[in-house]
Structures are given as structure tokens and as C-alpha cells.
Length: 352
Ligand SMILES: Nc1ncnc2c1ncn2[C@@H]1O[C@H](COP(=O)(O)OP(=O)(O)O)[C@@H](O)[C@H]1O
Ligand SMILES: [Mg+2]
Image (cartoon, rainbow, N blue to C red; front, side):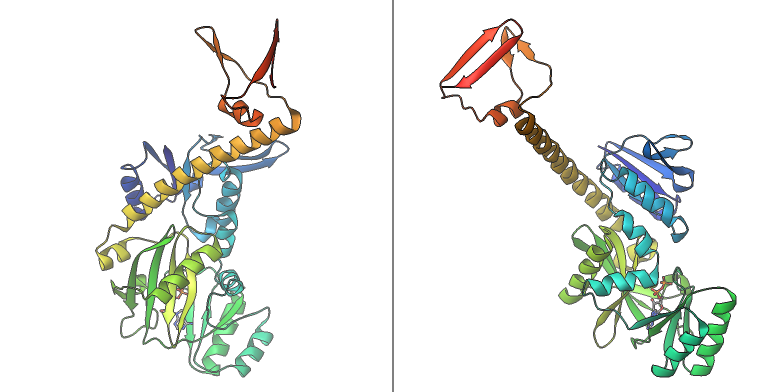
């Protein structure tokens, strides 16, 4: 089976590709920036480096929010023929923090109260009604950049004015007290394959490793595992990282579609890349077998509708072998008595 990893060619993608070569017969690393999606009267077409993309059994698409449209449409074009661990819509939802929370809430995954406002004035009205401190976020921020903390209405107002200058949406979130920690859970397939607790440095409230946070291995309680698995299903991402704040109760703050593996591998001591590669392989096998039976059922339906199938005959040592699908559609068994009428170019087998 063939795998393609389409990414920005970062270290984590390379690590997964290395591990995947122990499972798949071929592994190719494609650069997301060389992908084109054409939508013409011929339908959706995906090109790589100017040529139609090759066929793969599995395609794992990674990369940042900047490419969410490309990721979504390329998955729409190729997701029927290849197993792709992320559904098309997950790229637009997962790369936007507010859309993510809306989708999670719809699927009964607990989240902090979060507000979206269109203008500074309506954002200021929201601020007058909620308790401080609060968090404000850029919808596409990552690695802690784009998360702002305000402990008073004065500092919140000044942040709002800055957001206006940079034409950013106003996302205001309830502050969850966790002693500046968060939990990162890696979901692959239907399982949690690793988790770490991150603690921010003393001069920070963001626990991200990129902000200096320190990660330690964490064994999630069953309720945290369930929340992470539910979040991955809600977003439509078989492989993802779920960030959870454990306040009075656990709440999900974001789902990462393309998680870095350095920090979690170090904190857990586990080979997370290998677990992801194995899930890619197992799910591809499952996808291929369900696709074969789906094709089979479709042909069966066609035969039953038209009572006709166009195929080649296999004649071996003078005997005609009919494909299994014909035997199935006819419902004939070997102990049944049949009449066979035959003439040149015609053969009719009928149950007596
Ligand atoms: N509502 C919140 N209350 C308290 N801390 C938060 C909240 N939201 C985010 N944080 C802190 O900021 C960090 C980054 O937030 P997150 O939403 O995961 O964005 P990013 O994509 O930048 O990682 C979190 O890991 C957490 O430490
Ligand atoms: Mg995060």
C-alpha cells in the first residue's frame, strides 16, 4: 500500500514518514505548497508540481491554517479514493478557534464560554457583562501567539482597540483557572496515544512549549480521554491534538490538526510518530476493504436492476468460470437443478 504525506515538510511529518515506511510498501513526502486544485467543467482535479497527482491508498495532509482552503479542497477531491484521516470540513473548522468551539459545543463537548463580536462597541458591551480576568484570542493563532490576557476592563479595552487596527475578529473567552497548566492529548484513530501536562513558566500564563512551558507525562482519567475522543470525532479528525484546561471540570480550548511531535515525544517517552503511522496503516486497510465491499454491492445492485453485466469470460481447460458476483446475483447453488440452453454466442442458465 502507498502513502503520501502532504505537508510543509517539517520535522514531525518526516518522523511520521520514517515510521510509516515500516508499514507501507511506499511512502512519499509531498510539499503542500506544490499542490494545485483545479475546479473546471471536468470536475475537481489535483495537481502536484504541475502534473496530475499520483494514486495513493492513504494521504495524510498536514500544514498550517494558511493553507486550509487548499487542504480542504484537495481532500474533497481525493477523499473518496484514498483514506484521508482528516475530513474536508475539519480543515476550515479546526484551523479556526471560534468555529472549533461552535462545533464542539454542538457535539456536547465542554468548552469555556466564548463570545464573538463584529465591532469594538459590541465587544465592549460583552466586557461590561462578564467577570474578569478574561482571555482574548486571534482565531488562527498558534503556539500561544495570539492569546491575550486581560485582568481589567481597562487592559481589555486597549487590546480591543489594537485588534481593530489589525482588522482581527473579537473573540473573548472566559478565563479558566488551572494554575497556568493545560493538558495536551494526542488522538490517533479511536485511541489516545499520549498525553502531557504543560506548565507555563513563572512569567507566563500560556502553557505552550513554544512559550517555554514544561511538559510532563500525563495519564488522562477516563473522562478526559472520552472528551478528547469526542472532540476528534466532532471536528472530523482521526489524528489530532486536543488541548484541554482542567478547571473545575475539563474543557476543550482547541483541536490541532497538525500537532508537532517533539514536545509530546520527549514528555511521554513514547514513539508517538509510530502510533500515528500504525493508525494510518490500519485505517487504510479498513478503508480499502470497505471500499471493495461497497464497489461489490454497487455492482450487485446494478445487476439486479439491469439483469445484465458486461464482462470477459474466463475459459480454462474448456470450462467457463463465472465471477463470484454473478453466482451471488443469480442465487444459484451447486445442488440446484438447472436447465442450460446454449447456442452460438448465447448461454442461458435457468433454475428448474
Ligand atoms: N480560556 C483560557 N483560560 C486560561 N488559560 C487559557 C485559556 N485559553 C488559553 N489559555 C492558555 O493559553 C494557551 C494557548 O491557548 P490555545 O487556545 O491552545 O491557543 P494556541 O493555538 O496558541 O495554543 C493554553 O495552552 C493555555 O495555557
Ligand atoms: Mg494550544
